[in-house]
Length: 294
Length: 340
Image (cartoon, rainbow over all chains, first blue to last red; front, top):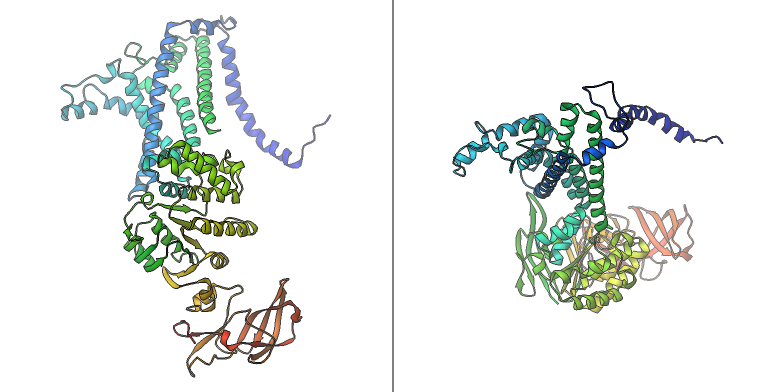
């Protein structure tokens, strides 16, 4: 049987083909190839022997103590970063949604951290936290809140949160902007009706703003979760997984396995585990918010 | 119930004055309609009564209480918006219950009140639905329900029927009128639709440029318009206004520069006691129950509404009679009515 396409369908197919071809080469092929790699024992120190081992790499990594640490660190880091980013973004969006002099300027300034390249952001915070010439030490000592300079990033109890802080600084603006756009779409009459009905500022937030914000919140939560769970650049610049294993996250483990130990097979397997974890978490967030929306 | 008194109420936005020193006394239980074209200050006035806009100058009294600086929820008013303003995430029942819930009314009492209102507005089968599952008319009934459930003494309505189609508007109009009779509360109703104003109002305040042009009963506004603006704003088709070509009423002094107004329906077959006018029929538009004509007179063209049995044809000459007592005279310079 011949497939009969209308003129519109044929034109669409022709127009979409180039993009599809490029995507197949640059996205689909690496995804499939890396899965293939994850099923082999590939170590670059002996490049010629690369036996097919089925899911042995996955098994080995799932039983590895470093993997368990990395999952724990990644979870803590993601939960803290996403929660604080979202809460701050809601606050900033609420503030910028008010009309006041200088509002436009603040809107533009807000995007500065977001526009800063990750590497620059990482270096900047590394300097701020620096034990000898860091701004944070200077500020806290001058304010009398600290007696002497401290090696902030050397403190295993703090490291993860300090990196998280740097990530929040960069990620919050976009989240705030996304929420602000959603907020701007809430009809003014709803607030007026709520005022006449007798709602306080807080009740108006709970009954009008928050329900309307759900689609935006879902986008922010999913997006921030996906970004945070895979964060790598800040860890590379600021702590390299240390001190000890205090900032040993999944993406750092993948880096160490793949590019330091040159074990490409287990590296690829870990990447697949991380991807699945990302999907799972995003799906949970979407489901949780979707259910309350229905 | 409450009487509403506005004393010199003014609203300024920067250098723009939206409402200018408005004096208006709305009686207890009255249905007051604020009527005017967009930008005339009617909605701003309503918002000031609701407490949604700050009053720049002047005093607002509910009975004898000064509420000028009181926030909306302390004024015990209910408001219905053109956009319905229903909470999209709440069901019909939750929307109606919301004002009571905020006032911490006991749950059983809320349920009883919601059921009562739903029955009154025929919303009972819809109580579990969300606003996006309702038609425009149903949404507006829910909005009315949310307003009446609190039994406030003042109802404020901001063009509540403007988003509805013509048929629905008629039935909602009678529903609102019935509600007013049942609730015996004070209603302030903003509209730009003269038919709504004429059918609903006890009194109408016609506004332009933030100033009340005339405050009177619907009949008074229609029969004795205070100026040319009011005369042309009410009536469809519009009143005919000519400097020449219409007879001068005898109460207008000789030599005074005037504009004469003739309502399209105030014509008859020539007869005794009537001034006879003649012209050529330019356009005939049958409207079913009657016919609308455009007739060229010596001083200009006029629109007339005549019984359908007049059987006029385009291009023909037509003679018709006008009762001079039914004519309106306005000063050409001030545009104010010259009363008999």
